[in-house]
Image 1 (spheres, rainbow, N blue to C red):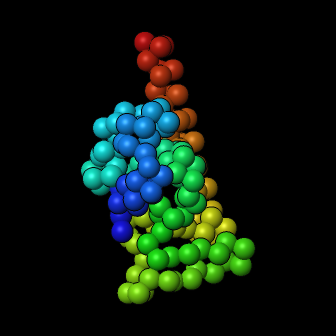
Image 2: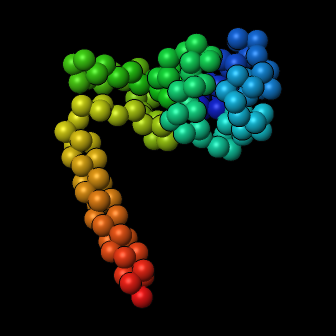
Length: 126
């Protein structure tokens, strides 16, 4: 089941209209509509707000039969087909590979910012 379908199901279970949920989240009704129709996927901040407003764990919106037990770094696959939802992966943030990837990305961003700063300085010199 998609994130949009889950949002709709949980919203309807709480007896909320799209307008009411949008008002509570401080977004447009069209935002809720586009999420529920899977035209847009909410960013992590909005998804977190949606989960809190609908009183569900964010993993219930993200997971499709996958449970993550971060305390012992193990994945438990509960799906009948045994597949991980490729569109909404859940990562163990304690993974050394992910930490290394994040550090590399931060290093690249730092280099880009330094390069941009030099370009701006050169523009002001002219």
